[in-house]
Length: 358
Image (cartoon, rainbow, N blue to C red):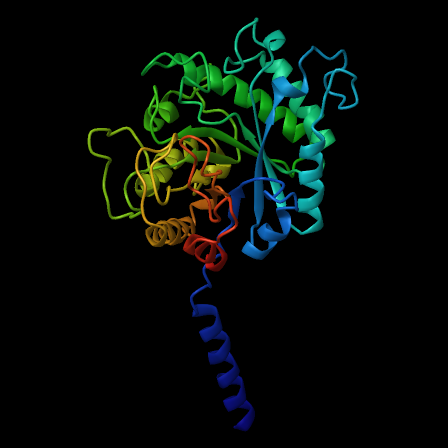
């Protein structure tokens, strides 16, 4: 009888454990910011104190390869001018257990028909450069393919409200995906990389982003910068006057649209995904600046940050990046004020809010 009671008790305990709600997944906290603080010291102890999981940084192809390399997949080709600053950032991040995500954009003129850096390059040349970069920076496993490609200032060709830009980007993304996966199956390829607004709005960019065979291009995560003038709140529905825009408060809607686009064509996304990588989000404190025409108080900035990271804890989001760590100097015209710390070193309430985000 005693053994039966013990058996029933153990069974009930196991059942209770199985039915207990799973703990919410920890939010992946990413950030953009400098490698050095204004006093010349490393910024990475600050990132460590903040609990940063992923440090994000740009890799500008045109600066690394101003002339065409003879062996473009070899990072040691003499034409490549790799930035010591970037190499040091990857090294310091790795020392402190922080991962690095690289955004690769800005084509050299020799790769895009003699045009400006915003123009889409040869798919083959871009894929070869990514191969070299992934060999150079072996510790980097998350690669963002261009940035805010639905804005004409950043990516061309991009006729307003047209299909040509998204379709051109689709072939570039496919080439990048194949090259990075050939290097390592552990590489995470972040495609899409759209912005809240643009010459082609994100809802439509997603819809038009198709390969010649009609499929959306392969990716692991969908990147998006959901900037907004609205306080982050998933109860809001639609950005007034811009039904095809997608800001932080529309991100649940956008996640469903992305899943619909990819779930029909890719077996691994049939049930869920791709997840959203929210590379950049921010709000200015104190005063408007050259990038943002509105601002909130420092206390309100912290509230925005908390709300954004609560949204980022949803299962359809893989992580959120704050832009950025530092304000610019006050004597710079239109100085940016989205930082967690002033240029003079004063920590804003948003610093503590980011540190506590989970």
